[in-house]
Amino acid sequence: MTTPVTRHCIRPDRLVITLSLWREEHLLSHPEDAGAVFTVEIPAKEFVGILEGIAAALDPS
Image 1 (cartoon, rainbow, N blue to C red):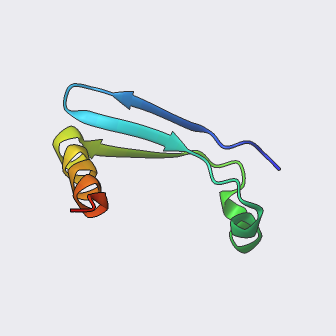
Image 2: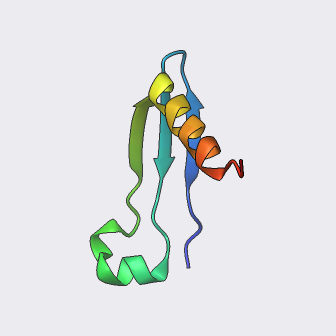
């Protein structure tokens, strides 16, 4: 089993996340993803909105 690669970089207006898929179940179905590193960029304001939505959904009141 390979180890996951997850890193992030926060720029003033964007969040950059890199990751690799390592779960054996996924790689059996998608062998083309083995060893691939994916990069996602998201505007910082959008990411904050996502986190606020998660926090609101988890709020018991």
